[in-house]
Length: 291
Image (cartoon, rainbow, N blue to C red; front, side, top):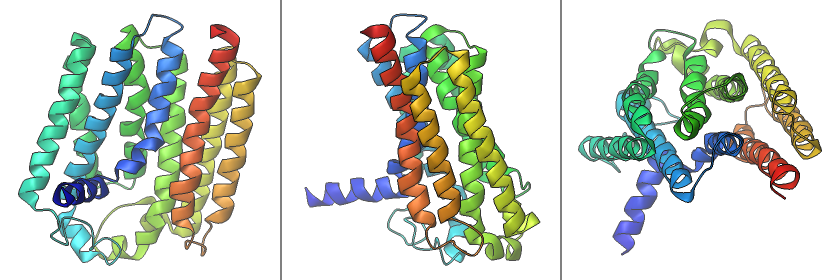
């Protein structure tokens, strides 16, 4: 029994399953908004969650395989599961295959349109692993790939898309991209030495932080615009202001020369931001439309 528990823990650490909380609330927020246009049942919500889990697990597993050589050379990442030998490449490939199959099956259960779209979505997710090899805009591409989550959830339920959901996806894109730039500052010297591309490596730490500031300002403005687009109420407005405060805190905690608290910002503050966003949508709808 302990063997299986250890294996589950190891694979969870490889793909950072806890990080699912950053994007999943955005997808669930899209579900809340989709309920304005169509009836939603438990099975649909379940398969959206399974699709999210499968897609993210497949993408992270593939990333770990593609970056195995790079990770083994980087002091910060050489203890990851593949470079350290805790998980073999063969096992990692099987995990990617299984996770991809879970995503495709879940998409199939959500409808033929989702099934057909699942294949190009996987390609978009997998391609991210190679972007840092040729472009400094890899952070923006990562944000774009993850921002497909709320759009995908909305399409799965309504077979349509609207400007509000596109803005919600933009909110997620800038939110993820902005923080990924901060996170990449840890590897600035390593990236330069190994011809890897990132905004910090190309422009330096101070300019990278400035770009991250701008992206997160767009995040806040985009989120605030949803208040008007979807005619939300004061509960949503309260969550928007809380998210603004949390973003400011994040950029105070992590500044040039103050990277020691990056994990606090990444795990704690970002988790609270994502959950606050979902609660803003859910509670606002619950009290002003469903009750």
